[in-house]
Length: 332
Ligand code: HH2
Image (cartoon, rainbow, N blue to C red):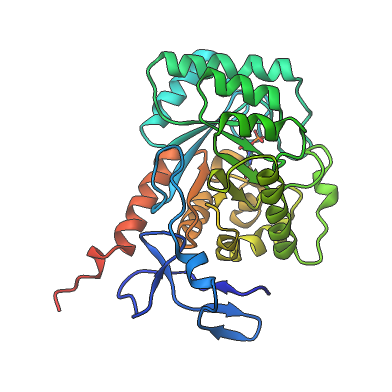
């Protein structure tokens, strides 16, 4: 087990409590190691505490809600729901009241999903982004794509950042598009491609391997001209991972702050929530998804990618109030 901060929230805070990666609510004081607990050493205190750069003009001292808007016929949870332009814009308008960022995707990456051509993907996402901006909705937009041409078209249509589930591995041009536009990019851990990834769910040490992969992808992005302050990292829940891998990664989230970048967590309605929550239908997994979102918040995760934006926002408001200074006042 690699040393990681022990994430805490709530009051009172002991002397020496440090913010966890710039969080207002999550804090830490000691590192958990293989053999027990110890005080931070060397650079650790600064690395795991300092505030992360803003994302799309928004401070990251509280978790941002990223609302999922899939313009696909086959996404595992909301496939087909927003395929028509007017449905997509209506959902975007509703989400813009509840979410800090809208994540728009035109290709399902669920396990076993079939790839979509560049032209078809552009044809799905660009009209929606244009219509959202045309309707005066100003919420930052993230384009969820593996393809450089789709990212470029989406950025030109009004998107603000790129979310690449292959961490710039799928399309050799993707890093250049991100670098040239100077936009933030989410680098997510995944193995192989969606069609075959579950056959590759094989790790000796899933947490260490995902961490090292993300560190390498950050270096590759940097070498391609992308500034480190523009990078966001994501352990890729469910991408080439089975239940035990997802749980190990969720348990180790605070370690990933060691990469020095904001963390994005995408667990909403995923299969492991159905397995543990004993719900077959993806649409019935909101309560379990909230539990995971709050766990992420308590681990200092900066961006929560979710389907249920209003419910997540409400849960986070309560969590922040209960973990905040006001809740610590007992009149003494
Ligand atoms: N998960 C999905 C898609 N994109 N991006 C990031 N950064 N992190 C994730 O965990 C992630 C993601 C898959 O979920 P969804 O978009 O709901 O479904 P589908 O791929 O079937 O469209």
